[in-house]
Image (cartoon, rainbow, N blue to C red; front, side, top):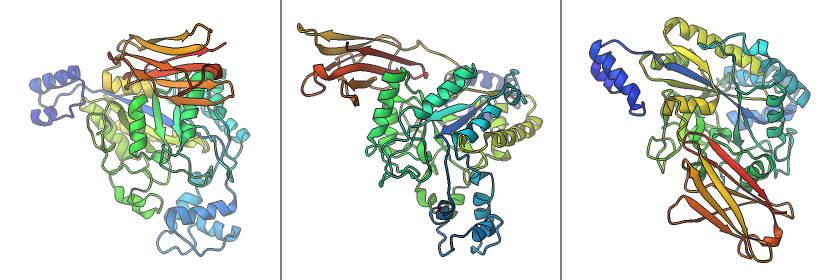
Length: 478
């Protein structure tokens, strides 16, 4: 590689690394200091999913726009084997219906059995990274709430899935896995097995975060969006609060998505204009797929053994090649917890082994999502971790009057922290704070225009900073 080509590396590279790269180019036009590939396994954690025969046939309609086939076990067997004439779509349909993709874990006992295997020390350490450490999962947990129709027997309730994985990590005494946030915007007809794209029509999302703050003293720093889909309202919401986004599923050949009805034309998972390397980028204000000047960082995550946007050997080689040229790579991979994660991890391991043969000087690490972002974007810097302070000021009758929130250290990621309120009638509410003139302090007044003082049960604040550090505090109104 020439000096000019080396100097044209993307400007997201930290300056200290860029100086090192330039020095090597000057000394030897082909010399590079190999960097690290940070492997982040994102698991959309949604709990078990049940799929009856008629639902599997419905996927033919939703995914491939195929109709006119009688819903019988015999026809399903033919479809799984690719033996039914579908006008050229036989192989693709067989891949979706007759493989690992269709082997759903349909109850908690089966899912727990699978998790017991993949989170065991033996499985994690069957292949160790360049630091001698075992496998790391990142559990992006969602809430199934507000639905009226639930044919796939989704686990319903706020915090149900979050608490399961939090308990799993505690039980396994695991402090390397990540616990993060995943959400599905509410479907139009409140069907739990479907997903929309509008956050503005999804008030359960606000309540879900408010409950995680007040009931679990937890706030997200990393997110994956449902169906890999973002629209302006989702994009701008994340810009307010969540610094790290692992939703980009851009592929080298986006025309492959046109063969599936629910993905064609950017219907879901539209990342056709997004970067296709293994770096991270700040999105544009108007177009989340384009690099720009927004605050949050977006990383790319391709699927493991899925029906679209799959990680293959060429993509893993691309990540190792990028690191070999002196630019660290964040190799994101995505799964669902209702399929066999063991099979998917074994597939990934094989891809890594092959890439290592071609790039022996490149190291790789199994990494927690937040740590990987900091390593790639900020050279592992913590910055000054965010610390706020809050006080509930009372009136002469000892009723809550004003909540004040101030910045002690660091800086809030967005324009203000996330305010969560619990009423005595068990409602969980999000509202906006009022700004101070210095933009580092906020307040909230309790009155008839907001929340009545006598109705306040608890108030909480959650915030992240640009480095993914989080801060949460809750005050009870006793």
